[in-house]
Image (cartoon, rainbow, N blue to C red; front, side, top):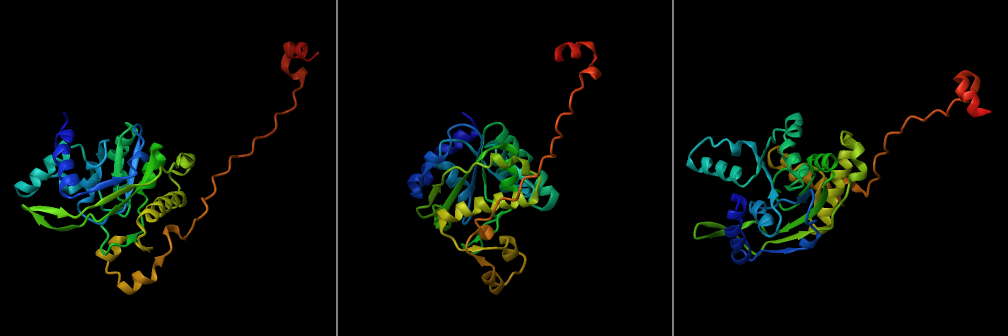
Length: 274
């Protein structure tokens, strides 16, 4: 048994019988092949409640600094645990570093595995849904994986029992698969990446019913965006859509074949033409 399987037994027992958590729609998750589970992020328990409730192994990206083990004994234990259960590091500094950091998650998908991702990039500061980052679209278009929208409810810690952070009856709902394989041509097109991301976030919002704010959650948590500005940015759904897909690049028109002149093609061509 792998370390993942070993630790899943007690985690599953705690989540199901301790927290009273339940899953809805697990039948929407394909039993084989690459899958991206894309969910809203409202509580610290999201990263282990979701995988504990389903059969397939789920790989989540975690902050790269958590894998270094720098600090006291607890940070070293956390780093060992993340590596032991097969989680992967993600550089969240932004820009090219973050895009390149998707490589380990893409490897999981290309091997037919399941990756979990929270497109908002951080926990919601107030329970509302915020703008998704395009990493989920990059992964879907590059790997051909289907995207399962996931709604997480009541996963916030409400206190502690026996020193263990406790959540009260979380519910994880898995929506129907979204297939973006027809849009693989837009893997490096910013407009396509934004469109796919907004469609994923809209599918999650349909499951959660959250109010959507058209701004990144980090701008509220760390960037100093005021509540007044956040209220001005409330929209009916991500992308404001349903928005049309950006047009595919046009193929160059093929030239009609030149008229064949048997005389110019040698004796064999003349024989065939006569």
